Image (cartoon, rainbow over the protein chains, first blue to last red):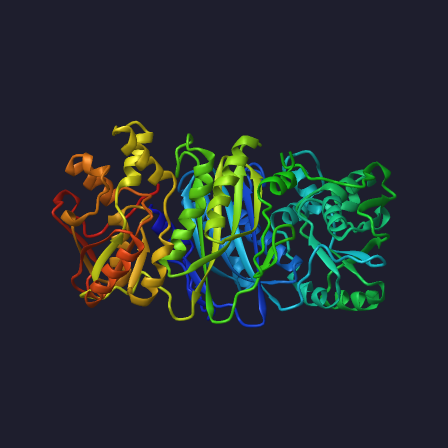
Length: 316
Length: 316
């Protein structure tokens, strides 16, 4: 099967998106960016055996490679609109391609995203998604605007994906239902697009949690030049994680990656609005701590072994 | 060295580009697309050992990975403006990173392009560049608009890069100066941005030659629904290629990849303007043939062994 047949069969979806002037099939795509918006751009690459276990089902690989990029858009207050896909494959495996395409497409359709181009090459399995989104002029949400006095909040539960990875790698065991829940959280992360409207109106700073809470909190603290004080006793755990010993679930929540929840800071007087909004959308939200002073640091009360003033994520 | 240190040291360039609202360092970048333009988007991935020999100097790898994307923009009539870089590295090799960064930066600076984000991961050496450019509304240049009666033209010389690859792989020998010329054409392709102004005013259809003339002519023919008749005796050869036997240089020019010249079609009455424009910019341009009829095919006169009505490039 040629590169062109692969693209035609698996990645040439009907699009009725009027902003796509030229989609797949030319030297590049052409899209129309409406007036009054800034263009948000992000890219995220997943390599087999590094970013996901090589046993991960193809459907999940397709879904997740797009979800993590949509999460980056949400963290900027942007709505994802278009994406390109660069796919390196060691060989043409039609069953794999069908499932991968299906996982990717299911999320693209539910989020109203258009696949506008890409590149299919031969090489070790690697998926690079480049995403483009729109932010209404002046509403962007950055990492560097956290203010002293803000409360520090997080969506959803923490640590589920890290537990899911430990389960897949047989470093952990849980009852069947709870294990399936954690593995689903690992393979099918929910980009929190549903909270973007609230955040662009009320939040000061935001980041998505891809590399673990402490790591991301440190980015926020460093880039905003503030001290984040977190309370480990407030960490939000799913019923599945509550089955684990305290120290283990704390480790998953504080240092485990792949949750793709949003960490954001909010003026304290907005707590009422926060509770109201999140109860309407049926998504848990937790106040984890406070912005204490204008000096870059992260402190964790109640989990002294994770105490850190600076945290650097070494991928190497 | 951490991922953040790599980015800071090698990929965090000073930018004075006022359209870049947010560059490196947040969940994504934010840029301003001016009114009256469409956004062009392309992505091109290069894997070591597949798209370039693993012995290719890092400086050339950096330069070329951007050049091939700029070429895609030129082929659409777009001016490249911003790009992201996804870089997978097997290990942190500072000398390699310095040279790669230097090659990438030299071209980005000369083309006034801003690096606005990226992803650095661990994995087999692979470089994926996503490029964004601007096309004035209504001036886009596609593959599908070649008209019966058009002349078919190509910029520069053909086959040099394929000869360069054969030289690097020791399948060919040439005198030192000519060998160096061909290897430079392989490693440092010139994206033909200099002809974009002419093309958006006068050309009907355009494609860049990344996979060989016949392959790209077939894309044009198929997407425009026309027959392209090429004259092998008109193929433009550099002085270096003229040292090779006719059949060998024909093979390089017709089926060799990586030239990144532009193949375009033009109403016959514009030939005078064509000659005038190209002589001003000191770039060779050659009329290779004609668009004969409204039926998708490619014919090559004077090189019967390459006769083809349809050509498909199998990357697998």
